[in-house]
Amino acid sequence: MEIVLAISLGAVMGTALGLVGTGGAILAVPALVYLFNFPPLQATTASLVIVIAAALVSARARAKARQIDYRQALLLWSIGLAGNAVGAVASKSASDFLLLFGISLIILAASISMWIRSFQGEIQPKKRHPILLPIMGTIIGFIAGFFGVGGAFLVVPTLILAFGVSAHVAAGTGLVVMLLNSSTALLVRYELWSSVDWAIPLIVLTSAVIVAWIAAEKGTRLKSKSLERGFAGLLLAVGLFTFIETLFLS
Image (cartoon, rainbow, N blue to C red; front, side):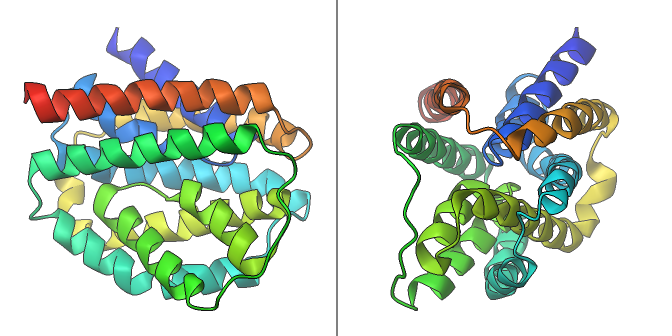
């Protein structure tokens, strides 16, 4: 039964990252905690490995379609390096409650953001105040390091609003930022690698990679609003469950 659940979780993550370019990674932490009984710190560490593999495969298709701005990705990642390192170190001493409560708020924010975005047309790029870039870069880096997620749901709108890139290029570039942020956070957490039981995460990873490989080819050409809304609904359900479980039932 656990193997079936792990394969299903990976499939959902791979579909979301391949088609939408965001959102799938943040399902890993609550799923590992509540479905597979992982301690939160080990769950956030394992999720980084899953994120890296799935983002790498998804970014491959975006690269072939020339939908990645590598300079912008490196710039946003480098700005967030300090926040990423601080977040990864801080997570080691954070309580289980803080990790789970925080990830529930992030999931809820991601679901609302994705739901609103699904009803919008093509977002028109706009230049914003220069201060937005270091602020958002630091926040995204900290979230990636502390909660073990890539932060793509923040990366995509930041690229569109602060850098003025198109939605497709934002999705592709966001995957690269996700990959870099997750890799940085994982390296800072090197002491925790041996404490993780990798059997289930590796099954999730394999499923996510296979599905993302297939879905990413479609994602470079399609903009499925119904998929975004459906996935936003799933995120909302997971976020509410994690929030209620952490706040009232722990």
